[in-house]
Amino acid sequence: MCGIVGYVGSSNSLGVLLGGLRRLEYRGYDSAGIAIIDPAGALHTRKRAGKLQILIDDLETTPIASGLTGIGHTRWATHGGPNDENAHPHLGDDGKLALIHNGIIENFAELKRELLESHPDTVFTSETDTEVAAILVGLEYRRTGDLAEAFRHVVARLHGAFTLLALHKDEPGVVVGARRNSPLVIGLGNGENFLGSDVAAFVEHTRRAMEIGQDQIVTIRADSVTVTDFDGVPAHGKEYEVLWDASAAEKGGWSSFMAKEISEEPDAIAKTLLGRVVDGAVHLEELEPLADALAEIDRIVILGCGTAAYSGMLAKYAIEKWTRIPVDVELSHEFRYRDPILNARTLVLSVSQSGETMDTLMAVKYAVANGARTLSICNTQGATIPRESDAVIYTHAGPEVAVASTKAFVAQVAAFYLFGLHLAATRGTLSASEITGLLDELQALPAQLEEVLEQHDAIKQLAGWMTDTRAVLFLGRHAGYPVALEGALKLKELAYIHAEGFAAGELKHGPIALIEAGQPVFVVVPSPRGENSLHPKVISNIQEIRARGARILAIAEKGDASVLPYADVVIPIPLASTLFEPLLAVAPLQIFAMELAAAKGLDVDQPRNLAKSVTVE
Ligand code: M6R
Image (cartoon, rainbow, N blue to C red; front, side):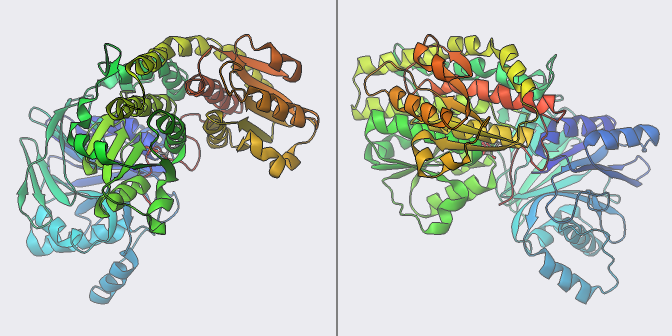
């Protein structure tokens, strides 16, 4: 949840740290802080509650000494409220060491008690678990005189998930980091090296990155990088080139990252399909390590959280229809606590934009430990979840910075559909021509989605009229149901308006009691075309709620005249078959939530209480 950056090199570290924090701010924005060692070996820190800009303004008013070694942090509060005292960095008890942390040290209370027993004079200035680690590393440094060794002694005693970075005034030119179940990557430069929660921290300076494995410690200097495990045994991470450049994570001329990212949805789908559809067939070389297992599986369990889980719900409809393999979709945080039935014939298919969501990571580890095969769908190169899985299908949506997930969702669904069609081809459950037809529909989506996005201004106007709305309901059936859930999630997280998504058929079993005069209800109307269309049923549902005073905002296929008499507003979408329609119906709901939040004067990219990457359980 927090963003972490470290630097050693020949540039003024302040600029590097603030640039890195700006790109990592999506990970948490309750407070921010930095620590720098100046050329004379003095340690300087500054930290402020609130968004990064408050720290930047403070540093402009009262500049800090410059130095070539530094660490920076942007926080999403866990232990202790978002104030100056709890902001990172935290210092060792002699003030010579500064340490920053992402994650939760579960046994911090016990460690604190032990510390107070052995060092009764210890003064804690914050309520954080992090300060306990800072004091412990500081004490170990006094004993060992070596920062990496001090880390080794302390991390062995920590329970939970953590990334820690520290520097010490007696070891200028060195930053040490450690990670367990929490992200950290190395940026390799010329005469300078970087550490970051993700590559965004340093992509402005270098696109050469190196992975750090679980339970490893890294030491960076200007001209060297050393990695060991927690016992000090040397290790070497995999080096890779970051596929996107710094401009991909810039806002450009857009009003928000979210607006920019919605506009990139057609591209996110196109890039995810690129090179994977050849001559009307699916090519997913990345599935090679799972080829034998995929021939044997008799069940698929999809795991994800939030928007990612909703993409998984859509995938269930498609994969079951195309392969006849039963698919369950579960929220990652529920999965491992209920003793799920797993074996080598179960494929656990996780989906995560960040690839770092702790709930999903733990669920994947549980699946591995209990004998299942694992595949992940992920948008972030080198992230932890794909590294823990047997294979990965990367989505190529590019960096998603806004907290609300948008382009990642459509790219995830595209990746799921490719996987489903691959499986259908290998299992022979669809003919080659059926697969080609479905791939044609998939490939038509980017252009169709461009058409949907042209309605941005009309949707913005609708949102502008609804700023006083207190509650909005979203209805859908079959593949429209996950879209309804996603529309409600977006409105909640961005506009802080109570919103619920329902399967339209469920209304009469209770939720219809919520309908009163003027209640706005978005309805995802399925196409009237095609056999077994649920269109008539949804029209009946609309009539039922309209009769009770609901205001109907319909998302319906272009030219569907049957919806006009009952809808107050119709947002038309291009013609697509049942499983592809959701990819066109979701964008209007994303735009609506974003514009309603903007009209209320809210921060669209950084909604309250949230963080982009949820790396705590
Ligand atoms: O990085 P992930 O895809 O694993 O994140 C999962 C959820 O935390 C995420 O989709 C969240 O629900 C978004 N804020 C929704 O917009």
